[in-house]
Image 1 (cartoon, rainbow, N blue to C red):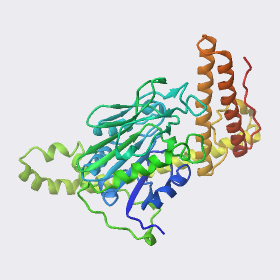
Image 2 (image 1 turned 90 degrees about the horizontal axis):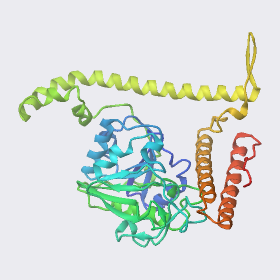
Image 3 (image 1 turned 90 degrees about the vertical axis):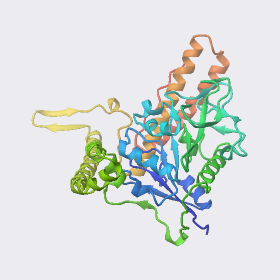
Image 4 (image 1 turned 180 degrees about the horizontal axis):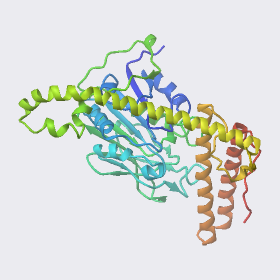
Length: 415
């Protein structure tokens, strides 16, 4: 059994799409053969106190959730002190995902862009599966000659960071950065605009091209001892699969709270430090109580959403809602395909992923159709590309039908 030397936290507090229990299960297995233990981080909020005993924190595509200012400060401080951070996004960047990963990434000189990399010529069968073949020499890109960059956005260098991989000149956008690294304080950061590049069981995922080799390179580099701290070795018999702690607020977060900060900085450093201690102590119980209430409300809201989804599923299966004045009939076809008809978390996550892929393929189909109608694409090339996209869409729809019990067909018109 491989000896565990390092520990990596995979954040799930921001509703990330990449999860080591489902879509990143194979990645977890690969990393653990490298001596890197993978642990789910399901707590809220993120604090330095919760990160300090680990080597790297991974944000595998936050989705419709935003990091709080105190959480961003905690991660930046963690990296500065010698930790590592891996930041993964998706096509559309922050705007498309309705998140704020850039507020963290820009501290390290990196910004995810609101676009999607496509390449009509250099791809693995579809334009949204572009091949990346241009790399800058670095330990992260060592031995890599080709990647499949599935459904990813580009990266802009906005500070002291280094671009390692760029798109071809035939891509849109051309010569764009897709992989970047940064040395920050005593720590390291890697940013990649495609979380799908490491996903299981999908075209363009972990087992495509040299994507798995890239994953190994990233984590090998980020845990190499350029850090000032020494992390104790963890025995393989002491594995932890999930980190769940009671909500707390670290001294760093308390010091960063805008309500306390003016009081702490109105006197000379040494004097204010002594004076601040009883003030901070007085506020700490109130802050802890508020944080507990926030976490409790969030959990209750999640339970409410699950119950509502289950109710919606029952309504759809019965065909309507009975009321004193009659029955309100529901039209199943008018309900979004993303409406979960199941309550199993892993299956729902897989369904969300499949439907996201379906929307991406539909957009790609619309795109090539417009190009063909404008005369920018020859009929034979258009027909070949359309056939590939439609074939994948049918396969995905069949998978969705098997998960939901539906019998829907894809309405694809002939041109």
